[in-house]
Amino acid sequence: MQTNIPPSILATPAGREANDILRNCVHCGFCTATCPTYQETGDELDGPRGRIYLIKEMLEGHSVTQTTQQHLDRCLSCRACETTCPSGVAFAHLADIGKEMVEQYVPRPLHQRLLRKLLLAILPHPSRFARLLAFGRLVRPLLPASVANRIPPWPQADDPFPNTNRTRKILLIEGCVQPALSPEIDAATAQVLDKLSIQTLRTGQAQCCGAVEHHLNAKEASQQRMRANIDAWLPYLDSGVEAIVSTASACALEIREYGYLLRNDPDYADNAQRVSDHCRDLIELLEDENLDAFRPNQSTRIAFHAPCTLQHGQKLNGRVERLLITLGYELTPVADAHLCCGSSGTYSILQAELSNNLRDNKLSALHAGQPEMIATANIGCLHHMQSGTETPVRHWITLLARDRR
Ligand code: SF4
Ligand code: SF4
Image (tube, rainbow, N blue to C red):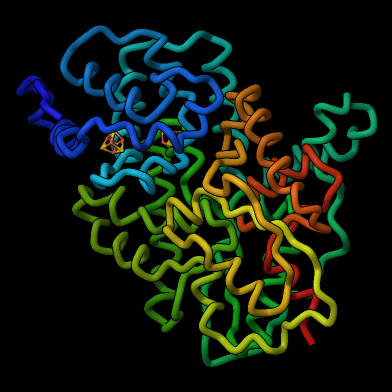
């Protein structure tokens, strides 16, 4: 694609990067067909090609309006377009640049600014989120169903977290909302790994990976959080921990991007890349292990939803499904498995209507094979889907922990 970006913008690292990405796009439109938001609205500007065009216009100095912002806001950052694109266009990185730039040109209405500030004040802070969730659970019976459905019930009594000393060790990143929403996921992970003679370490202080602030355009806060995490995690790498693991595919993707996101920080670039190089999604850690001890006595019919951060972001499509089938679970077919469930971090709050439509479409596809259970690999997707169905939605690792012998 031809670009005509003024020298003042090309002189900046973001301007140069955007220009390089734009020039890779041949405007073929293949990506449009697999974009969930384009499928919902039918508007070219709600698809990747349209958004690329909007960002190009903005960089070239054309007028930027609330319409530009709205079409960029509607992007889920799901990266389905990257999986489809034959030219390797790094859409997510371009969208980050575009979203940051539009924020400078178009002031948001007061209610949007307040809501974003509120989300930033609560979500990345595990103890604040836990207190708010506890309050929500207490008053849940008094709330309308549309709100109550979004508040998961109190978790079962905490599963024991094994503390056996093992030679092989990993550092488990707990994240911001998962410890309060579903503590059983990390406990199940530690139990499965213990059975495989791998010790699970935790820093003792749950911490957001930085994705919440990143996707709400709070760049400096997000990068500060990443630097703090790097400082906290490096001693574990120095002491021989073999991997940094997250059971939430969205957090794993974000940590894998630390090297890229801090590449221009002379003090942190190398260590950020080191952390990223050691980050593993749970499936990568387990798929090469002997998992005979986790074969279920009785097969369960499962519909698996591969989160976008697993299949498009980390490019680990089909891996969890393969592992579950090998163990003996029956996986039901799921149409349009490449499409997002609509969760996407704060998207389910900021773009509620689109998000709920995507969730309902996803649940229809998942229910088509009449599964007993839906399994997934990311806390956000799990609770978003559970808010729309009575079918239990679980993290896949909890099945292995349940069925271990
Ligand atoms: S598929 Fe790739 S090259 Fe084609 S329009 Fe989309 S981003 Fe551009
Ligand atoms: S990231 Fe997802 S929602 Fe955004 S343009 Fe690409 S496919 Fe569409």
